[in-house]
Picture 1 (cartoon, helix red, strand yellow):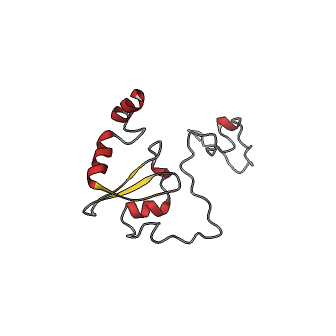
Picture 2 (tube, rainbow, N blue to C red; picture 1 turned 180 degrees about the horizontal axis):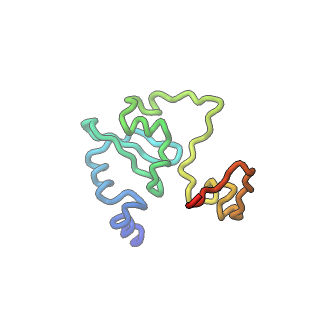
Picture 3 (cartoon, rainbow, N blue to C red; picture 1 turned 90 degrees about the vertical axis):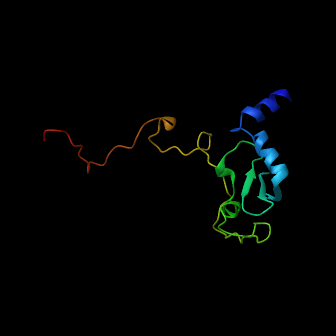
Length: 129
């Protein structure tokens, strides 16, 4: 419990800070929650919108519909006006960089570091030619 409190006070990049939570308590109105547990708020006078993350603070964890609402691109929340999901759309994924699911091209060191041989149509430039 003590470690959690210290982390909340000094580790603002891991979880919402004490100041943010106090501000939210006094000046925020909860609007909704997404599938990842992130909670969305609006100020009582309606001019500011923000999110309290359910875990690590990572902007790519916000779904596109909520992102549009946060940045005032749309006025209705995804709860008020659900978006029709197209058959070709994939499920939203947060940024996978740094995880085992991160993309690695065939020549990357994590993939063995061997690139495909050139086809002969490329000639490297050397100075003095």
